[in-house]
Length: 330
Image 1 (cartoon, helix red, strand yellow):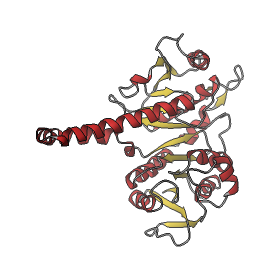
Image 2: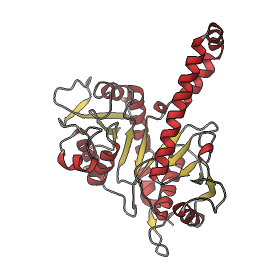
Image 3: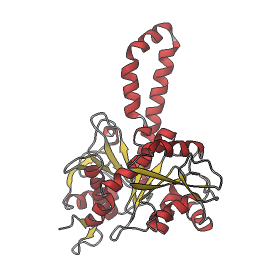
Image 4: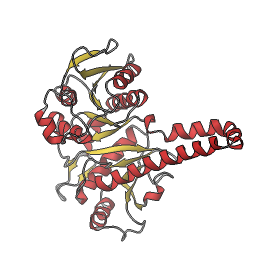
C-alpha cells in the first residue's frame, strides 16, 4: 500500500476536484491522504487537518515559512517524517519546491532539484528536465538533470539506456550560449547515452528519451507547447463545427481526433516529478481536473513502487575528479 499525501487546497479547482481525483485514484495499492480544512467531505478518505492555504499569488519561500500549518506544507512534512510515501499538489509550484527543500530535503549530492515532465511526442513520450524549478543553472546542474531524467526514463517510461539530448538553438555542438556549450562538453564525459543537441521544433516529434535544459528555457518551451497544442485543437474543433460540410467530415474523423486529443492531453500523466528530494513529490497543473489529479496520484505511487528515489540516490555520487558532476554508482 502506497500512502500519498494530497494537498486538498492546491489548485484552481480545489477542493472539490482534488477530493474527487483522490477518490478515483484510491485502490487496494494506493491510499490517498487528504490535507485540508476541518469538516472537508473526503468521501471516506483520511483527512489530516491543515486549515491554512498557500495561494498562487503568495511568494513561495515567505508563504512556506509563514504558513507551516498550510495544506501544502503539511503534506510535504508528512513525507519528510515518513507518514506518507509521496506528496501531490496542484498548488503553487515555487511553494512546492520550497516546502520540499525544507520538509523533505535534498538527496545527498544533489545541487538543485529539478522538474521532470513528460512530453507527449508523436513517436513516443520523452522527458523534459528541468521544466521550471531553476531559472538560473550552471553546467554541472544540467549534467545532474540529465542523470535524474535518465532514471525517470528508465523506471517510468521503461526505456533501457535512454538517449539524452541538450536543448539548444542548433544541433551542431558549437551552437548555443555559454551555459549550453559548457554543459555539452560535460555531458560528453558523463557516461550517459548523450547524443548531442536538439532543437525545440523536435520536441513534439520525439527529440530524445531525455531532453535537458535549464529551468527558464525548459519552462518557456513547455508552456509554448501546451499553448500551441490547446490552440490548435480548439481551432480545429471550431473549423469543423463552422459549416455543415465540416460537421459531416467531423463525424468521420471523430475517432482519430479523440485519440489525438487523448494522447496530447496533459491530464494523461497528471503531473511532473520534482526530482532530487529524499521523497517523491509530484506537481500537478494548477487547473487540474479530477482525472489529472487521479493520474498524478498514480504517477506518484508508481515512482514509489519503482524505487525512483533510491535509484537517484545511487546515481548521485560525486566524482572526486570533477566535483559536482555525478557519475553512475560503481
